[in-house]
Image (cartoon, rainbow, N blue to C red; front, top):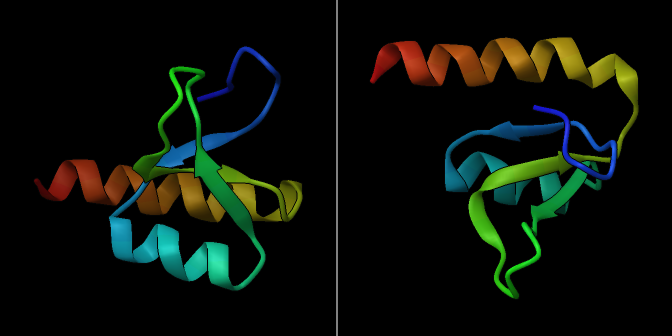
Length: 64
């Protein structure tokens, strides 16, 4: 999704979000309610990761 602030945000597993944050590719999503969402990532690494992460997010949803 695109956030109201224009950021690309994906839903992944909490473990994957943590790994991407540790790698410097994103930050946990804060919907503005004062708490971070552990399974949502704001992608900060640039547009090149958008499509691969969107596909990964889709696979996570389809696999559930």
